[in-house]
Length: 240
Image (cartoon, rainbow, N blue to C red; front, side, top):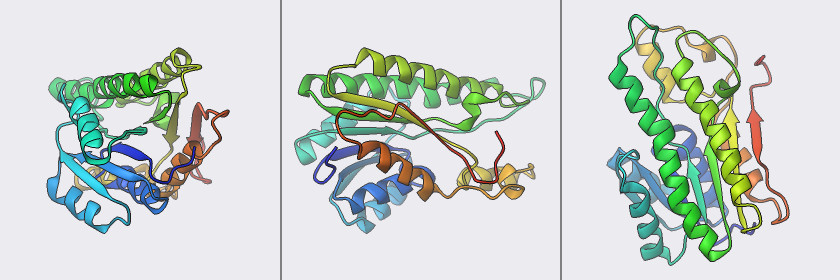
């Protein structure tokens, strides 16, 4: 895909992988619609980017957010070409201490919101005959570990959903895939460290968010005849 002057919607863009993806795409001339909860962080990011960018501070799990993002893209730039579903939260807890409401919120953000966003944008992309959807998964989709069963289950479900969506959209001009990062240094680990939790990134050299952004760029820059359906990116020191 020729990326210059296309329009990409990036969720969870205020930090970490989402911010890195926004910066990478902006250097290529992609115009951006950025969303996350933190309005000030979004505004600062948009102001620092070389390409035109607009923001929407919103809860990604709100049912009307996907349509609002599409509407903002069309109003601001007259088109929408790419959706990067990156927003997500991480909750780890053992059975006897798990906060069920926190787990339910993670289900809404990490899966329900992705399904809603993917469907809303897929309908638009299918109608116009081109587009790309990349859903940010995780290495956790492929492994089972104590205390993170819900998170891993959601990422596995995301992989299956994305694969099925790709098959359904075959022949429409809409490409669909997942990128699954291994251990990546983001704010998630800052929060875990603050709680005194053992953090995998402290024992294994972690990826930088820019590494995942480069993978997304690679997926998008493939010719129209190619669809990178699934990409797993792990640290060179990580055994999974």
